[in-house]
Structures are given as C-alpha cells and as structure tokens.
Image 1 (tube, rainbow, N blue to C red):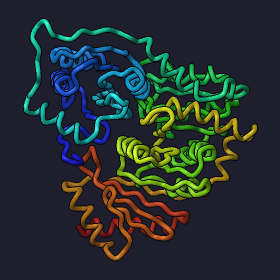
Image 2 (tube, one colour):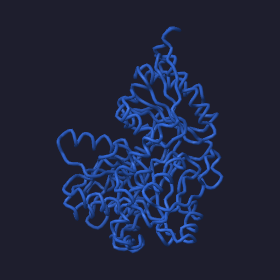
Image 3 (cartoon, rainbow, N blue to C red):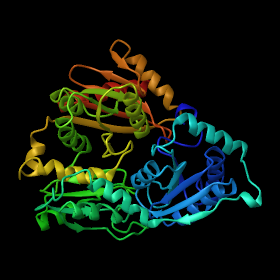
Image 4 (tube, one colour):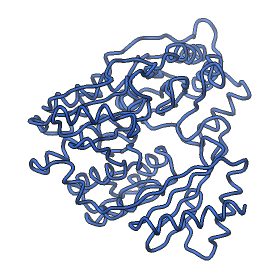
Amino acid sequence: MRNGKRMFGTNGVRGVIGEEMTPALVLKIGAALGSMRKGTIAVGRDTRTSGEALAHALKAGLLMTGCDVVDMGILPTPALQYIIKTNQFDGGAMITASHNPPEYNGVKIIEADGTEMSDDEIIRLEDRFFASEFVAVSWEDVGAETAAPDRIEEYIRAVVGHFPAGIGKGMTVVVDPGSGPAALTTPIILERMGCRVHTINARLDGTFPGRMPEPTPEGLQPLSEMVVATGADFGVAHDGDADRAVFVDNKGCYIEENYEFGLVEDYVCGRNSGGLVVTPVATSRLIQDIAEKHRCTVDYTPVGSIYVARRMIELIRQGKKVSFGGEGNGGLIYPDHQFCRDGGMTAAMMVAVLASHNGRELSDILDELPAYHLVKEKHHARDPAALVRAVEEAFSGETIEKIDGIKIVRDDAWALVRASGTEPMIRIMIESKDPGIADTMYREIMQAVRQA
C-alpha cells in the first residue's frame, strides 16, 4: 500500500464480505480507533446488506475501549463528516465501500475536523491493529451507545443554507441515488431549493437492484431516459456513499467528470477570484484553463481526496486564499462548507450554476468549455513501482513531475503513470486537445511498459 500503509488504501479499507472483510476484522479496527481517540465517536453506514453487522462490530470495539458511540444510522459519508465537524465529536467511522460492488464493504476513519484520517495516523492505527495493542477498560468504564438517525437534518439544512431561497424555482431535476443513502438527502435538498424533483433508484436497498454503486454512463442510461422524458434541466447520480455526484445534461448526455469540475469551478471562482484551486495531478488541464480565467492558481496534490482536503487546510493555515478544490471524478470540495468530497453539495451547486446562466440549457453551457481528449487505462503488474520507474527512465529527457508517480509534461499533452493505491496495477492517463497526439503518447508509454 502507498506511504507505508499495510491495510488501508486511498479511501479506507475495503474487501469482500466473508473473505477479506469480516466482523472480527472490523471489531479490531474499532478497538484500535477507540484506543487512539478516547471520547465520543460517531458511526454511520451506507445501505449495503452487510452494513449493520459491521457497524455492530465496529461499535463493540469502540465501546470496549471506553468510548461512547453515537449511531447515526444510514446516511451519506459527507453528512456524517459534517455532523462530526460541527458537533465536536472526537472522531468517527463510516461503514461503506463507496463505489464497489455490493459484495464489498469497508471502513473509513474520520477525524474530529470531519476529514478522513491522515496517512501517518492510519499507520499508527494499523500498528495497533496488527500488534493487538488495545486499551480495553474495566466493566464500570465501558462506553455507552445512543442512536441519532435524525441528525441527518443538520446536513440537509447546512447545504440548503448556502444558497438564496428559491434559487431552483422553475427547474426540474431527476435524482438517481443508486439505492444508496443519498435517497435520504439529495431529493430533499433540491426540493427545498425550489426544484421539481423526480427520482429513480431512490429506495434504500443494499442489493442495488437498479444499477451498481459506481455511476457509469452505461448504468445511468435509465436516468438519461427519464431526464429526456420529463423535460428535466439535468439529472444527478451518486455513488454508494454519496461523496461524489455525476450528471447528465438536459439532452440526457453524460457529463464527463472533469467538465463537471470545470462548470462548478467556473461558477465558484467567478465569485471568489484570485485564489487557489487544489486538485490531484490526474485532473484535466481544463481546470487550469478555467482557473487562469479567474486569476486563480492551481495547486497539485497526489491522487486521493484526503490529500486535496489536507492541502487546502494547510494552505489556509498559511494565510493563503483557497477558492475551490476536488478531483476529476465527481468528488468536489467546498472550503466554505467542509473539507471533504460532498455529492449533495455538488448537486445543489449545479442548480446554482444553471440559475446563474439565466435560463440557458446546460448542454449549451458545456459546449463553450475547451475540449480535451483523455485516455485512461490500467494494467495489472506484479511490481507496479518497477514499471513506473521504467517509464520514468524511458522519458528521462523530458519534463517530469513526481508529485504522484510520474507526470510527463509536454506543451501539447501530458501523461500520468502511477501505481494504484488499492490494487496491483499501474494507471495511465494521457490528455491532449488533439486525440492523435494523445494516442501517440499512449503508444510511446506502452512501448516502455512492454520493454520493462
């Protein structure tokens, strides 16, 4: 795993239920967390069928170390993070496997400020886990549990409160929560903003009967059809824990996530110019184009929302102005709201984006953005790091950045080659305004990979 982590990946620990992921394992994670963060811990889960069993195991581990537990029930990850941040909890944990298929589940650890636990602290937690160094308390000091499923309302109000009353009046939106916890939040948020809302896959169901938790263009075809049939202004879909949002436009066309980022960035930076936009090295140059339009500067991080969030916090502590941040996968971060990806906030922000264009259709607004061609591939490897080094050596005469893996930067294109943070593979991304240039660069990189 990246940065010395043995079990946790870029966004928590995940595995197939009954194989890598078991209640026994999660109980130990809870005990390790409780030994590190004495106090009151908030726990939430998504809709997966295994969620309740794992949540009970996690809570048992926390309670045995003397922590009090507040069970928030089923809710989006960003909702749990917001509640933790604003209510002075000592930490939290979310039972979720995000976009993975239904047989998976996992755990995300959340700090008192609402951000995911840092790599250094995760390594400390893992050290406790593997050494079984748990601070179990005596019978009179065991923690107490309370249930608070109604606290989700705090998050809904917070998102809606960022926008003028009735900003969505006259708009029609179709929401696809994918049978996940966003069914409890996004439709309500948009209705309170004044939108007329239709839903699809809005029944909580951990078997995900309508589509898989990953909102792919193919899986969102029913959403696209409903948008067209109802004459909606756009459709929005979420992943399994609703920290991301993806969109289809008024014509039912899937909006590639970098263009989603660009649309929202243009709106946010247009009202908060001259600051920094923080994003991973894998994000499109489109984000840089739009930042420059508003006198903003792009600050690049390794791939992973936690690195974006913590970099934003660090820059603000340095006295710098941070306007916006996020990833090119539908995970956007709003520093005046909270420092984590927030799919519900992004759904609401798209309403504001459209409202600012005085009745123009979303498809027409998208057509005005610069067009880029992106190639994304992944290849399994026994030693991903060795392959990355081989590509670096093959392109040693060019401009190379090493923020995460290697990024080969040319005037008319860039390529990123990095080891996956969760699987034994390398990920390759190439982008250019000219598809032919991007494809040629991909062939050059693959030649180096095959030779290695």
